[in-house]
Image (cartoon, rainbow over all chains, first blue to last red; front, side, top):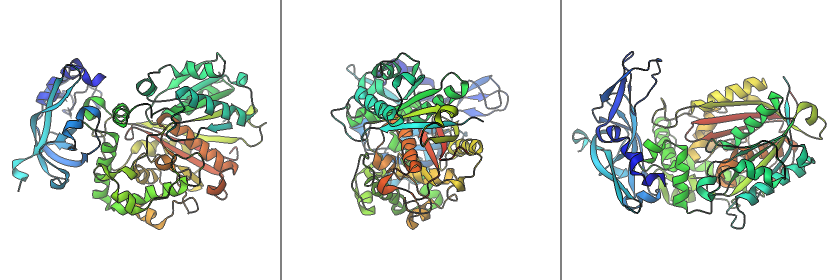
Length: 136
Length: 386
């Protein structure tokens, strides 16, 4: 139901399309997604664009998926530690589970996610793929 | 401090109950608990019902009213939601209501009707327990989240796939001894390894099933409970919360909320973890039981695999875990799970657990997790008031 809403996804374009997080003006902690209250107690932030490079901390290959992902199943999802600090959840594109290892370097890539609902609205966003330097 | 007693318990059969709707499950478990206590529904001062997805799976919100309507009463009746920990959080509200002095006798329910929707729809609904904007958007499922935990844990502690499978094998064995369990078949390590992969490295037999079921408890303040034949006493209850998303945690191989909730519950009960005779932990996926027994301090960090191999967590072993069959094999009707865990502890402490009875069970512990460790409740119960 909610996953068909283009508005719900549109609201997060700066984060989803450009990896825009924020940085605390007091202690310089970087957050993604953005936070309103820093762990240090400060409420003043500046937008911060993350570099989109990092390494895989863990991953899985989803074989039994939610409805709207059925066309692309199976697909890999991982938790990635970005070089700027934050950890994020992202799909790992162009990969199957046999070619991934914990610690692999990855970089962000703009991709189609899902087309859902009667109107077939297409959601886009950033996935990650193995960095050129880590492909043998 | 004044203690609260459990004077009645009731549970439905767990399984794919095609003839039972949400209301039928709730009615059956409520009436069984009231009958078990031997009280009248008119004596109940408040009702709390733990449930996660009634709106998604049955199109029905407002379960508080439904629970009261079934009993023809008009006392305050409230639905409590905390994903898979909904039942235990509802129980905590019941304890608080008695402690506050507003209620003397409280009915606590847990219920989930899951099989009226298809598996894919259930999978989507359950993702509401995670971070929908960042985990759900990326196509994650709950099995996927725990699969990532399993891979991180196996990488760090050299847990083998076979050791992990032994959790499910043990819980299926226990379920054959529990009449209400969803499954009554034993399984082997090979069957776990060779069942279809749901989210690598977890297979179908690493996962708790989609189950319908309900469970209920009657709580009473000390002065009332002590007049009953064999009340089971709530000695301690702790809850801790953590981030909604898994990626925001500092570690992927432990659940700090479990440790914090356990410390709070044990401190209230004034006992150490070594005094626990019987434990029910939240094994929504096999890896979850591995982490739970370590986070609770039942076994040293990194040793769970070896402990599984040695068979110490069977109901007749040194550290009995999930004698009812756990979420894996007794079934996991989301909101009902936390209450069913208490139901099992009450059965064990009363000596009513039949073929799965643990000898000299005097103190029991329940551990119920919402999401990937975002909400954790740990409760301690005893035959003696403490």
